[in-house]
Structure formats: structure tokens, C-alpha cells
Image 1 (cartoon, one colour):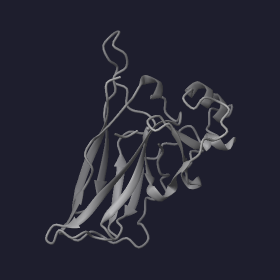
Image 2 (image 1 turned 180 degrees about the vertical axis):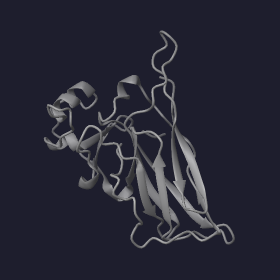
Image 3 (image 1 turned 90 degrees about the vertical axis):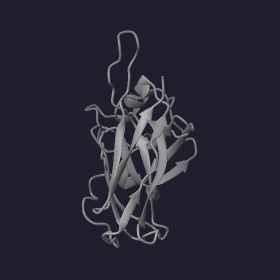
Image 4 (image 1 turned 60 degrees about the vertical axis):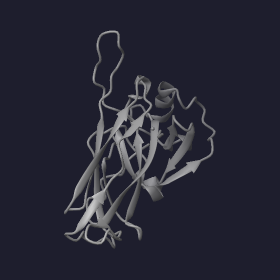
Length: 211
């Protein structure tokens, strides 16, 4: 079971240092679809209350079944409320001295945005992200912390390790609202995450459980 976290600034549009192109025989294997617990209260973009998901993709040689190291992998999210983050940029932190309830999105918005509605990281805990599943805070590396309310990067380039694995985190800050039947509450759609190595691609979905 997984839980709602943030994505990478569009500075990784180029190649990753040390990465190599996938050979023709390379194949890409991604995770199964994820289902997250969700509620209409968590549907606000940039409220920093959501679900943290850790995942990975694997690149291997289809002719030998051996893992392929240092292969460049591109990943994208098709919805602006689901963010991709490098695994090394994420750290679990102790409960901060927050002055508001971390599940009170209105109070967080008031405390952590300026007069123009832009996100601020002062106080420090405003730059930490609350996971509603584990009820823990996560800290994101400074270069990945939101600096404005419209910050919603959804593109990530990484490379596989010596086991052919690229690890990543997803922060599900919001899910697409679909508008349910009258009196039935808000219904949510799915978000698709795609991965590509040039010679092969794969995708998986994030879905919501019943409210």
C-alpha cells in the first residue's frame, strides 16, 4: 500500500552525466499500477498534503536477461499534480515545529503563501511535505522545493544503477477531479506515468480507492 509528494524542476531536459543510450536489445520494465487512498480535501494543487510513493523501473538486455547499467531513462507524468522526484533528493524528517495542523490545507495555505499566493519556504516546515498514509513529513532537496504556487514539474531524466534499476519517488499532491453524479461527491480520474529509453517504453497508472 502506498501513500501522497513533489517533482523535478525542468532543468533535467538534457542528458544525464555518465548515462548512455540504450542498445537495440534493451527493454524497460515498470511497476504495476498504484492505488492510493484519496479524498476531495486533498485535491488542491500545491497544498503539500498528499501521498508519497516510492517506485523503480528496470532496464535489461532482452537477449541475455542481464541488467543494463547507466542507461538513460526519461519519465513524465501526464497530470500536473503528480510529481517525479529523484530518490536521492528525498529524506524522511522528524515532526517539525509546525504551527498548524498538517492536515489543515487552508491553514497551511495561509501560513505558507505570500500576498500574491506564491509558495514560501519560511518558516522552514513549509518546505516539507506531509504524507497522509504514513503520517510523516518528507524533506525535498533544496533545488526541488517549490518556489511558487504554479510549481508543478512533471519531467525527470535519470540513469540506471549497477542492477539496472532507476529508483524514484512520486508525490501525489492532487488527482484529476472528474465530477461525479449529484450528491455522490467528487470522483477522481487516473494519472499516467510514462518511461522511455528510446528503443522501448512502458507506463503505469495511479488510481484512487473509493472515498
